[in-house]
Amino acid sequence: MDDSGGMMTERSYVILEERGLVSVAGEDARDFLQGLVSNDVNKVGAGRAVHAAFMTPQGKYLHDFFIVQTGDALILDCERADDLVRRLKSYKLRSRVELEDRTGTLAAAALFGEGTDKALGLDGEAGSAESFAGGVAYMDPRLADVGARAVLERDGAAIALRAAGFKPAAAADYDRLRLGLGLPDGSRDLIVEKAILLENGFDELNGIDWDKGCFLGQELTARTKHRALIRKRLMPVDIEGPAPPPGTPILLDGGQAGEMRSARGSIGLALMRLEHLHKARQTGASFTAGDARLTPRKPGWAAF
Image (tube, rainbow, N blue to C red; front, top):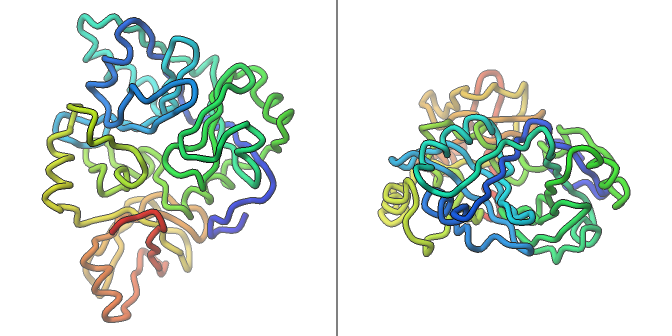
């Protein structure tokens, strides 16, 4: 794969060692999550996974995760699992829910390359899921173009993936793929307690269900959508020069036009001010960040 994020043709897997796995079980598990997260938990089943966010009451980002079903439990493929469990427990009250950090026994994997869906018995639609090697495999619910994911028993995960025809790849290969497609990676790209979902593609990327009823942070999120208050958007940027560190200001004609997020080589993500994108198109001026020159690219899935 090159730095532009092009899909590798060879079927590949990466065990995502930085990811955590949290089990949510018990009689009230679905109702408990349903009132907290941005997507419809009742859509999760043996054949369906969803992507969702957990926010502050003021609608600011705390966590996002993939939700799958294994047996009688819901599994959250997340980051910062200890923090997520702590925050969820603060809302447990009398709910009959059991929260357990399963990171030690379960692993999350990213699967990508030509024919990934067929190798896993999936129909290729975002969010489609099937049982696989004692766990579950599913097309990424955000965007099928990035491939699939799996939640497996940690012992034997690599063996099962190799047996299915996947070869090990570097974490950087998957990182470049998701950067090129404009997909954020949790708190690497969204600032905790500051980021707003709609600035970061959660609407177009199937992370919000507007018909599910109330959830934590819904009021601000809905107001932002209906009043068209979105003035910034996360998007891929092509980088000429050294990749700027996250948080580096992006400048246009001396004024701040955005801020860098994560990057690999010549591809990265940046939170860009929409008014400055329009200005650059009109004037032909270039964006800079540190010693690099940046060219923003609107993802094909984005609606702005």
